[in-house]
Amino acid sequence: MRATAYLKILVSPWRYNDQLPLKQLTQRLNLLYGDDDKRGWYLTANGRTALEVILKAVSSDPEDEIIVQSFTCVAAVNPILWAGLKPVFVDIDQANLSLSLDDLKTRINPRTKAIIVQHSFGIPGPIEAVVKLARKQGILVIEDCAHALGVPVVGPKLGTYGDAAIISFGIEKTMSTKFGGALILNNSKLQSSVDAVYETVPKLSRRESLRWLLYPVIRVGLRKLPKGIGQGCGRFLERVGLLRQAVAPQEYEGGRPPGVPARLPGVHARIILDTMADLDQNLAHRMRIAQAYRESLSDNPIFRIPPSIDAALIKYPVLCATSELRDHIYSILSRHGIPISNWYDPAIYPQGVNLDKFGYRKKNYPDAEVAASRVICLPTGSNISPDYATVIANDLSTAAADFQGRTKRVSRSS
Ligand SMILES: Cc1ncc(COP(=O)(O)O)c(C=O)c1O
Image 1: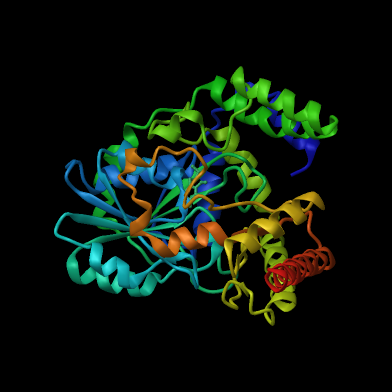
Image 2: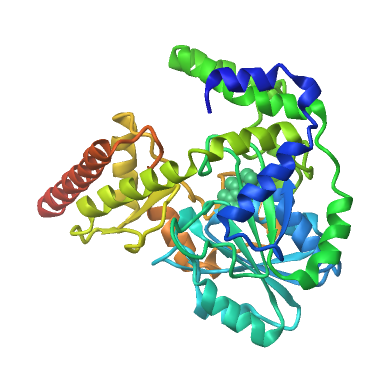
């Protein structure tokens, strides 16, 4: 979206609650997901609210359980607590970083009311197998498509298989919008309960809306400052509440971030709608970057890379052969200024989440814990060209070879 158009929206507060963009965005999203008039759309301030709405519609019995994978963000788990339900974690399959079907079967019991299938980074999880398994037992399936907006580029989208799905327009997701989410309802039997819960979700306050509208402007400003000063100013603005963090301090303890739950105001719908004009290019670009990484890394057995699929990934996760190798590569690539990230290390991200609040015991999820200790996420956004992706992949391979050479020398001399 052009900066001038963004600023024009920002200085028109009388248009913050326009209804038209909400209607237009719903139509646009429905078109993206295959134009089905039976599908229900509920626009929310974020994916967290969308998840809370559907979970409240599923059950209000505090003994009821919701299955969610480890190797995820606390933002995907907290809504279970906010809905007054019990999260039950399941280990992952390292091949697709989504839930393990074998482990899932051991966690299902008569208290299980829904299974959340996370399409991590945009890699499709085993959704068809989970739907088949769940249907037999009367369990609902919710797709977490926070990373998978409009994926795959061609064919039925992730988010249309389960009874419901959530998408996100938030920080570090597919689009540059920083704010917003939606609940997709595919199972019309749930409509009246979802409607009833959605009715109770408040409108976002103008103040909170303005804070989020200022977020990208402030971030751009901070980036123009020398690094240390920019970081210091950023921390100060977070402390005074002008800049929101992707995960708020309250969420580490199972609490809610400010302004959640909330519906999507018209002003944010307008921004999302405008940004969606570039969605096809955005997804095609991310696919091309994933392909460049794959071409450079697929022959190297010390890396486990995502399956070869035509999906646009919001990040390209690489699992290294050992955690020591990962740490070494991570420090080298960071030193070279490559914008890598550590989703999801730890397995319930970010560092410092109070795991006792969720009843999470590391020893019960060995594959998720190993993946967390070995993962490096490579960037796929518009700031990365295919040539630069190849440079990054080569840097990764060189750092790995350097580490292996050093390890061999140490073991020979000892
Ligand atoms: C896997 C996953 N699900 C759900 C969410 C929540 O989305 P939102 O940030 O829009 O609330 C996140 C956010 O980081 C996420 O990573």
